[in-house]
Length: 622
Image (cartoon, rainbow, N blue to C red; front, side):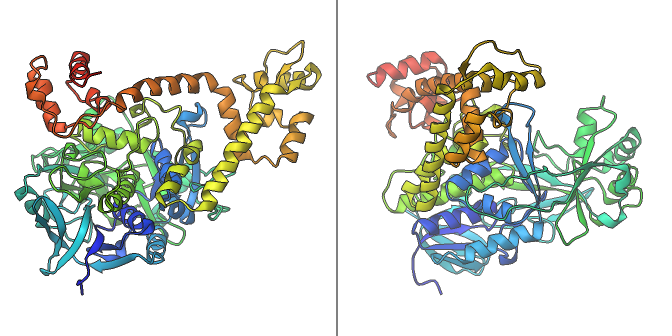
């Protein structure tokens, strides 16, 4: 069956695995996707949603790079919201509520359309390594599959252990078995491993809920999309709802604490700090009398509901009693209880910036195996690993995004430079250049890079070049076109903004905080220009942002350029830090362990001081 040698073998069919397989195959590598269950490719194991704060920016970046997550999200969306619109554009974050079953179905359909991609259902229990180089994988049936490169995207399946109260059993997620053998295989090669924990809430029957006592959360009136290409426009939406816990709910939950694996010692691994279980919330935030519960439908044609905010591993009877005391859940019926899951991960400081392992040439890790949490973080790593696996076997330089180019660049740099001891989740605060890394300009930042790789098609590049050209023309129009007071004062009066007495450039008016592009669209000269030049609202929005925030954008670009100078000072792979007497013992230890590729990365390692960087600058002749 497997006489041929594959270019890339991807292990795991979750978000990371699906993106990795698609990327490698689409660029030109003969790729095999091996997963334990072909019916669950791209499955949403936790909440039925994509995007959110910083995560939405990542999905846009994946789409701009030629990945599929944005397309699948659009084609399976049941609700769209742009979050944080009351803040600046750097904080705007798209989010879709998805149809869980449709999401997985669309992923499978897209993957099966890729001619270079094969599929196989089995568990991978071992990898084949010779002279420090990957040569393939071995299935649970003992079948060797030869490959020039391998991408491991095992999610929560590596020695997965599910906890519900005092009960636990092996599993990668509810209803599926764990993956065994691979961790031991990697440890024998010298890899360090650890344990992490994540959890999920109960799924309930929506017919048993009283939505009348909850707060309705409708989608945007004019919903946008994730993908920059033509995908289905969402016309009808399903609402989500909000309710809250109460002191009574908290008291009922506390009754089960002595049987909770979180508190009785059964779980000792680290869980996600920013997405804690309900028992962790009421324990850590004892002063809070209530917590929000988001009631999220699982799809168009199902009554199943996801109880977001009630993640728990408490005994099922405690879960049931407590949830029945939540407003609107008095008659709730469970589909299944919540649970926690422990799994193996490998500290990502063992990786290069291409996500290739330092120990084994041609072996890549992506997703939760690297200690991250979230579909979006996993998908972006999978995309980058798939690209770099292809480049590796073709003796090309790795594709690496800088911190000022993409949130994906921030994510991977954080992982390989700082590591993580708890499930890593992306936030806007992690990006020092977030004004540059907006969700609205991901295509402008990344499409040309994707085209050069061979992922983005010519029509994508043409579209983004046209967008850039028209944006520049519109910005120039506002900077050079003058207004007369009689045209703008009525608008300013309505917006309670100071009126003007003499003509000036339109950009001065648009720069005002209370004014938006819609307010100026009715000025005759603006209306005529937009009509004649066929300016879309997307272009108009881009021009507005560039005008309003030009000072911030220029400042961040200058700061990024200063930091990029250190990027260009490369550190040889065999650099001997021990010969530098001026370096502290801690600096030598961490530099030898991380092996930074350039001075910029070295400067971000915890424990490395400016004086250490100065020593390296002198030694490198700079």
